[in-house]
Length: 462
Image (cartoon, one colour):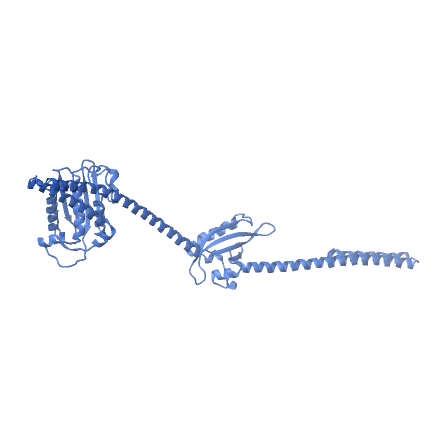
């Protein structure tokens, strides 16, 4: 029984007493004792009912007090959990205005809870993410998201007077008994450090992947080096062995000319092996680094002419070499050693893969920025499928199986061109010929003095 029921019960007792009083006045009853007895009976019943109502009221009051105590305890427990959460926890209204915040939230935003309350949460987002954050907040308000379902995303927030941080958000709806959205619960975790660690791990994984790929590449290169060099060394070694053996047993019977033939054969084989070793050494990283880049004043016309003279001697006049030079000035700064590596190796390849008696064209021209070297042959050409791989170490075109070689010279050329800051390109067609074009920029670095005589050019070559 509640207070309203008790008041109604008292009113009923009053009404019954009033009825008895009015009856006694109207009928002038003589039996006063019976009247009073009835009145007191009614009063007794009313008091009994009031006693019961009072007991019920006291019981309800006690239960209400217990409920209030439970609510106080639950509220304290909620506050303790709210404050002890390691992650920032916020409660906002549907507009995103902060209404509650725990200590972790105060630490995260570097601002006291009293100043945090009443602020728009989206104002802490970086400017570039402000519109996206606002759209997500609008999306949360407009969709009928149940309380148990959370929305998650990452956002860059800027705490007060601190550098921006990356935060993982979890948002849940707060609804009243009618199911209306009345607020939002936010759980925020700073994941900046974990992101940095993740980025470092990804970098380390990528570095390890590249290192493993490099190791595999080096292993394959070593295998190809051993296979190719062992194959290429067999022919000159066999020639040396056979000529030396023949000279040992038959030189006393042979003429001097025949003996000299085998001696020259041995010398040529030794020179061939020496060139193979030089190619391998130059290609190694240490040797390329030792070459460095040291541009000096150079008479380009005399340099090219001297180079051609040496090439013709080595070729034994088996090919015709046509030389064309166009330039307003013959003086420029070049690294002669790198330039020699470039041109020597390109010419060696052209002579090697061109039929005897064919012509090799050598065009040289200069611009205001650098020199252009073009070497054109009319040899076997390079298959289209091999063009993109010709500058890789030990790669040989598919049409060169019957021609000895390591497949190193074009790799050396490419490295030398790169060291000179230049560019190299190739055009080729099967059984038509190949043209290599090298563009080498002038250098402003000058070391030493300039001399244009032949002796200086020859010393540069050496």
